[in-house]
Figure 1 (cartoon, one colour):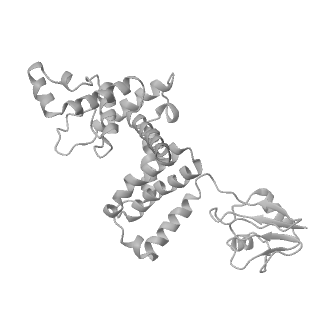
Figure 2 (cartoon, one colour):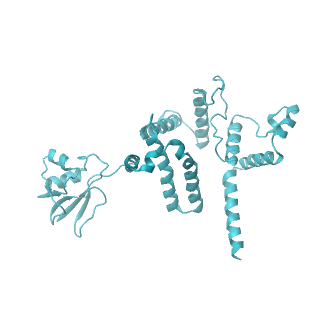
Length: 305
């Protein structure tokens, strides 16, 4: 009887399961294609391997790395399996090769790729809102590509530095998971998260030229995001600091006229609508996108009439 032994190309040669080693040691004949990555490890373990172009009728066949083809009647043994996330190594390797061999990929810079940092997440959001999860998965891959591409271009950091940074941040902001802090519920987790972020902002100069002794709850809010999302984030940050959400409330009585004159009435009303959405527990960006999607569908239906 033939046993097909499948192994992962992402697991170091020789790191096989006990079932795999048992099958190899008990087999009368072990064959493998030329250049198989396990050959040296098996030779070091005293397992004799015969190089063959294809599987024999009997014994153990070390299938080439990748999806294994199992002949009829054969038994499949998974000799090594990937850990979750191991396929990200394939993406890193693919990006390295593209950067070295593709003229277009080789000439890209952080600035030339910058538009995609905005476009790709919006395409992923569009797929999510459409309910097409296959399309959403594909678009998430495009978002992930931007991370790997920029990390590959960078001269003073790499993809492992990016991963190390976010892991350190997650550990630091989840002391109830990785430390000794006890929390009662998700709301307390959120309060702790905000307090930790505030402390982080205090430890670094976020705004160039700012007084290092002063930190604002609004430090780090990216103004490149859509206006509705920007207004909502500013209001959420300000509310957590106890600041008023209204433009006029933030001005002294004799300054209120100046504040309202510097912003159009429509602009002030839009800003106030964002505040109303926040008090209702709604995301104004999402709500407007849903209304726009509904409007699009209605117009298309009207055009068909």
